[in-house]
Image 1 (cartoon, protein in one colour):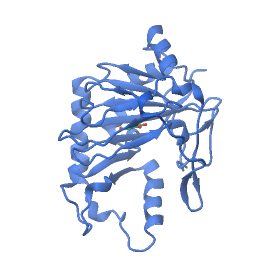
Image 2 (cartoon, protein in one colour):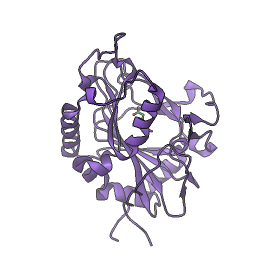
Image 3 (tube, helix red, strand yellow):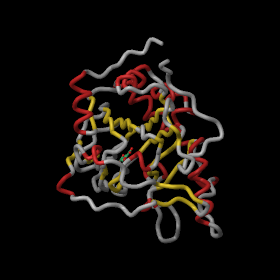
Amino acid sequence: MGITGTLSSDQLDSFNSQGYLVIESFASPEDIESMMKRMDKLLDDFDYTTVSVFSTKNQQRVTDDYFYQSAENISFFFEEKAFGDDGSLKKPKQLSINKVGHALHELDPVFKGFSSSEKISGLLFSLGYKKPVIVQSMYIFKQPGIGGEVVPHQDNSFLYTEPTSCTGLWLALEDATLLNGCLWAIPGSHKNGLARRFLRGENGVYFDQPSPSYDQKDFVSIEVKAGSLVLIHGDLIHQSFENQSSKSRHAYSLHVVDTNGCKWAPENWIRRKVDPEPLFVVS
Ligand SMILES: O=C(O)CCC(=O)C(=O)O
């Protein structure tokens, strides 16, 4: 198979005890430049007036369908604060998008190249994955001034397998700082299990439990330089705050589950027509 693990035993120990791990200089400046340039082009080509995410009738249904279909598409999601009272964009679309997802890793050659690189496979091999599948990718903008907060959550809530197997791979494409909305996490919180699940029902998506309340004092900030990768255990409580600064904080995030011995939950929001290909298979 030819995959070799890329994490040292110290890195693995740290990941297992903290629930996250920062790997500096994981992506090269060339990797970053090519992904950012590619996203510029995708955004330039995106004509938001053709996307029927705005509807006077059945708004919720239309929004839900756009979201569900994004599992196998390259779809564009706006910041909540991007629109004025009259419904028009307050800033150019390039500064109004919250994220693009959720199948960049499959459908776009540049993002696919990075996502299926040996670097990524080597990491997953080190973590013990046997038949890993990327279930979603997101290009997250955290726009200056309006980049919204991401409330405390665990990724296994959204991408549940039995047993749980999700890991987040969050790559900083720009420096992530306290000012522009870096990640925050509660170290060790992955050891306390999964608090709740995000389910897709007949009438849309919902959580099966209210969110536990977390003490902000327990969170630590994860400020990183562009090119750093943050590995996130699926049960780790993490969040990010609004970006109130004038600098964006672009990131490319992948979520991976194992399909060897772990069953994808049919109640998850992602229901694919075609099963994704594993990155490798350990026999
Ligand atoms: O980029 C962010 O601010 C949050 C990302 C996140 O929570 C995730 O990728 O799981």
